[in-house]
Length: 487
Image: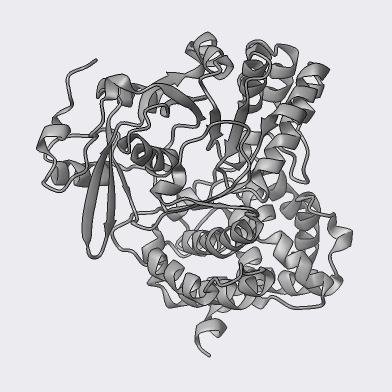
């Protein structure tokens, strides 16, 4: 074991530190996607389980594409700090739950052996929506180059689906496994199960049957705002800790995890760390996906166009604040089934407070990434349901126009080029450009997003969004949004 990093010694009084014997921890979880969110959320829940004395649940974190985080953690004995920060102060906790980390392309045999090990009961994932290689309308994207490569050489996979399948092929029979998806997708466990079975059927029918019969895929909902680390956040953490932690995470205090109580075998008692185990996750996930993630997307695209670099900066803009209030509390809230006894209006008020947290530099550019993967999940189902019922959603329709304008222009209103990071942006942007007229552009965009095809959208909806897009082209965001906060 490496010598302890300096921040373990210099962190201020009150900082949480691992109080268990780290040498005695055994691996029980393999996690794919070692980003900041996992380390500040699921790993933190698992840290509490370890602190309570159940040392079966050490995590081996896996990066599939970039080794940066693996190297950072290896250099500091796989310890890192989570600092919860808001206007009231900061609370730090040094975490040791991720007791090893692998870069999959360089450690594939070891990774597959871990998934095959019966002592590992949980494989979990945070690989973002695009990491599931799913077509916009659902189903496995067999045109994805990485999926094609994995299907051709299933013993040396590159994708999350391929890695799980290859590990399961080596796993002994009757060794129960639970795969926990922690990404923002509706019915995420069911979705992952269907994708993995589809993938497996193309390489090994017996494996597909085994996945269908013996592997559990509980649905889950995760909620915590965890911005990606920046030089500024790392410098602030350095000052707070008194020493450099190259893997430090600064996040909000709020955290929520709702998990369907459907496991194939042993599991950590995450409920002792605040997780909620329930029979049906769907009401919680729909509420969070639409109200939090849907509002976040509205903030991101309006903020990018209006030159607001962070969420809190955007929420200080009256035009954006009015848009977000309408999207959240007037349009999207009306489309969710609120769990019995849950204070939905209180939840919305908490969301606004979280968005206004000035201590989190949560970049609108980061949230705006991969919109062609996110918008069909966050906005379009609610819009389609409302359209079928003949109900207008004026704020959400404006938000959709803002997104299309962001994609087509890729510049903010000062003329600054925007860094549009979205693998589907080029195709959608081309469809927008080819259409020309704003209404035709909206029809083409909704059709290309493949939710149900443009024919499923009433002309009135397309006409209204087209009018909003035309207003943006002629008068900018002020022309579109001023009526919302001038009321």
